[in-house]
Length: 450
Image (tube, rainbow, N blue to C red):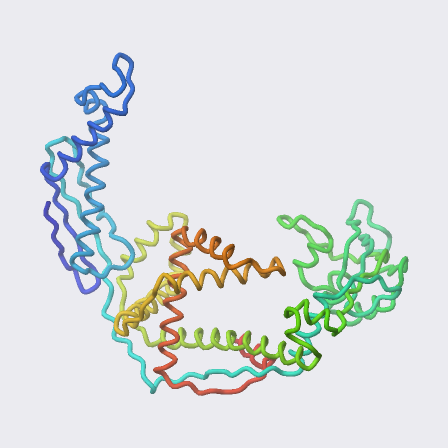
């Protein structure tokens, strides 16, 4: 076998692979013999089908399979052994060569390669970014405290609707003249007063009692959220048509989630027995948890800013035409318009990945399996806690994590996340960080504007 590389330019090359009968005949003969041992044909005992008979019937398809396997392995090994940094995967070069696929043929294949560019992006203390130190403001602390107390509170059914209650009632669609629309929407459903954004509509609901009726209620204006309206009116999510008409509302019941009392039973339920003993310690614990969450939010913001800043520095050229062809082969459902529209974002991400890879290599940043395992475990733990207040045992979580990482796609994704995290931690020690304190509510506005 002979493999040669021809560089077209700094970003493109062509591999030519010549395969002779000496390269494949032994493999093909073995495959034919193996097939003969497994084959069952009338007139022959099991495992006794002559190889010549198998070759006559299936020889060509076996030859094609073995040559393609040999070709794939040879190209992959050549790229690794010669340390050729490629982008995407080798693409068979389009030509009109036709093979007879005879057992004495010599085959010549050509592959296009997209070569990785040289990465000359460097960072130093001259690169400056803002690192936000988020402080817990009174409003955020109060909202978090209220949310936790409600999560462990109890449901009651008061006589009169107040702000924050849930109204359970009948909603009947009306005609323009205020009469009931025959055949229209008529559902018994729940409406959270927190979902009502229109002040005048909320005012019409506050103070209602069981069996009270609102003769004409503009639900669409009151809620002003299509997804919530679909759920409230129990419409088909796939083909939802939200009516512009008003509704007659008859109150059937009122639900209120009372906040849990700040007592020892509540503290023990949240933090474990004896961990928190009074309201002051409770507030300190909630503040500590919020600050931890806010540190993560600040890091996410800094990582996003660093990606944006670094991507603007990473202006190296890519083998664009090759990559577009490769993307079309790898994603057959993507059309030309979608490809052109999304290519710049793809190229931007790819350039940053090349920068990350260079930093990992130059700084000898080690990514161990233990790092990937712990990152995956933390991810799964967070997901499980969203659905169950009782955490999994370490043994259970470890088993789920090992199973999760058996999927190659999951393992690759977590590996990339760990790599990005290590690069991020390294760059934080290199660039200049302008630390700036900011209240959480102000930080939220800043993050939403980004």
